[in-house]
Image (cartoon, rainbow, N blue to C red; front, top):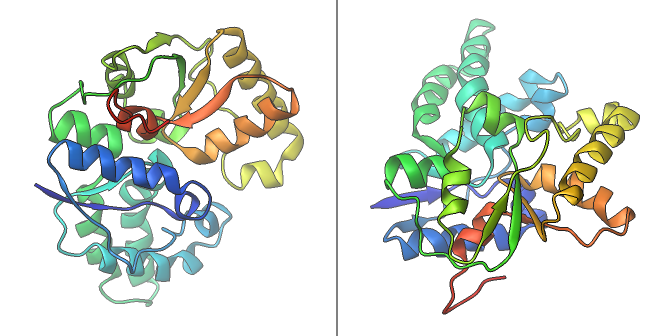
Length: 251
């Protein structure tokens, strides 16, 4: 099986280890991974800020970069939701307003081929035990996009529960937003910081060594709160845990 990796701009710029972990994990499971070099930002930052028209060129670029790939896998519920939920609407409006003929077709063709990492592992590959080893206590934060827009449900927890050596502890108030919300954190810093403080306190109270999630944007927000508080709890993307093995630990 072949799949293309959509690494996302946040991971490419700030968390390249996550992209490496996804490749390593998928290849271990027998997937041949492609990385289209033409990929860039999916357009979520301008779209979320109200600049829908400015996101259209990024839609077209992303769709063209992944043309011909049956499976497009991304370690980001946020970016997967942008493509699956918002791309078709953006494409239809662009054409209705006389811009970018064919944009709707590009969007509608790409959307169903994009999978968040845990969806791809559980639904497409049909695995929950990926052969991982991570001897630490972990608590899981479900991001809003993964939880609500994609409906990931218990897929991430099932994958974590199958990791050898890992003790999974429940996060109180897990379904509450961490306060990041992309540009929400910029426009509403006080509210964002308060929400982040609540989530960080709940995570620290679990006694876990690691707070993991499927979106590094959320984890970056929470990591900043935890560091400023001097908390020993560290953040880590789910992919890095799943890629780690007893023979060849990644983290």
